Length: 242
Image (cartoon, rainbow, N blue to C red; front, side, top):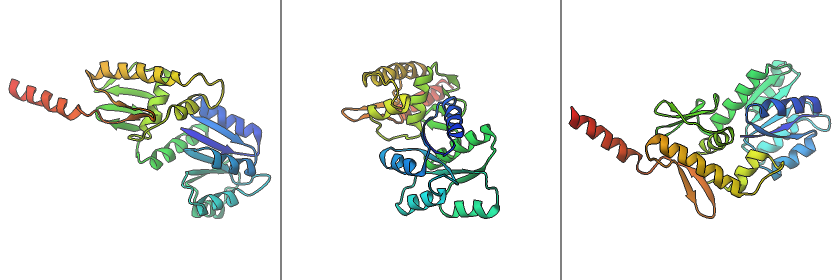
């Protein structure tokens, strides 16, 4: 998950970035509406956290411009204004949520995750791919109730793919998500992470491959082609045993 924080107060922006970072959420900071607008055009974000009262322009103007340009990126507005009129205005203009300052950090994180999940078509934090269960809240992955021994970065990659289930994700996109442009290693590190993760899931599932390699383009998380065939074999075995 990648978030853009548009907030004029650098202290608040940095604290939000740290809060999200502690929960494996990558984020960029824009300290002005102008910088935020540029960042939106250059990068792809899963969510925009938008201060309603910026120093150089109104958050309302940014939101209106986004929606008029058919930008569908979810927007969570944060503001010290707690009047009903302001909340209605923001939601009417296309905001997905409105949180007043000061806010509870745990609640804010929960709202961010919920908005992104809904935008990706997932109602809960649990995303299933065949018998693979990925929980984006607890940051755990399991198969038939047995937890997979994934490293932190492997879990982050898998959650990133789970939220985009079926989509092809390039190595460059993975690298940007993991390192956010800071001290990025060679692209081959993504192949290493995917290879190790694939082996762990293959072993735990009894021989299923959930990650498809699309040569020259990247990787995709999909239901294993032979999943239902193996399920039928197991069911037939139990039926014949009875």
